Length: 350
Ligand SMILES: *Cc1c(COP(=O)(O)O)cnc(C)c1O
Image (tube, rainbow, N blue to C red):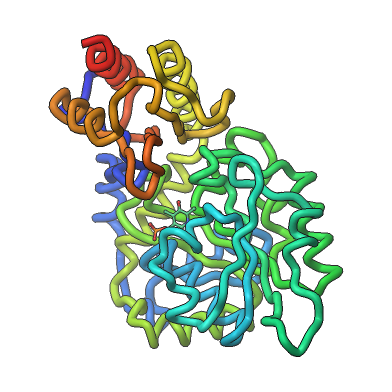
């Protein structure tokens, strides 16, 4: 295995299309997706709808648009949605729920990005003419800022049951749902089947350049399509991109296990370095969060030093004042992980 020129652990969004994916993308016939004339888009949507146990799906330019369109279809202005306080929809979508749908977000605490049925119950607003109405629950599988943690199936069942008995809609942000599936052996349908809507991201660990696929009932998807048009997310010969997604589903799912192994090796190595404290003892999937307060250096200093050694990681800013994050993906080999650890060791011992 050769060591890549720059080892980019900033995010799995840094994954690039493989040679096989590029070749497949260039080989397909394409048409106008808005006229339902692109068979790649049609096939990809049918496939993801089936995987997630839904009637239909729509191909969108990003996962963010999957979340924001879902909220806009499900909610009315003044409604409140419930999500973990670190959820992407709350911390990384520029206030989209408020700006685009007039929706408030109630952030729920819970260890490692996960809350349970009781916590959900406590967050639901009682019926009152003074209060905004609780409308929908978001489950982020896996939890990004929780450290790639997997919502256990029992916790999901609890949350689903509390949500249903209180008339709430259920939406799954499945940006990394397939990481959870590969790590746990539990199927996409078992995780997402009881949700009204769910989506997967193609541009993270799956290695496609662009896109997310949002699934739900036929009626929901029809309404989602209107917003896709209105917000400028309707594309034309997007079959090249859908083809990348189809290729990823065929070739890049099982291999996510390698990313999980690499993350685990990285975490073990980091935990042996002076002053570094892992956020979660067990790394369940492909994300490693760690605290560097004990090193006497700031994340900015460490990331700058790493960059000089051709290693990219996230730190500070949105990750937290003393937190750093490393994410493994298809563009990072085992040798890269060893090299990244060596770089970190030199920096902290130097
Ligand atoms: C990356 C991410 C998104 C947004 O996906 P994009 O395709 O980057 O817009 C949403 N939710 C989670 C949990 C993510 O990690």
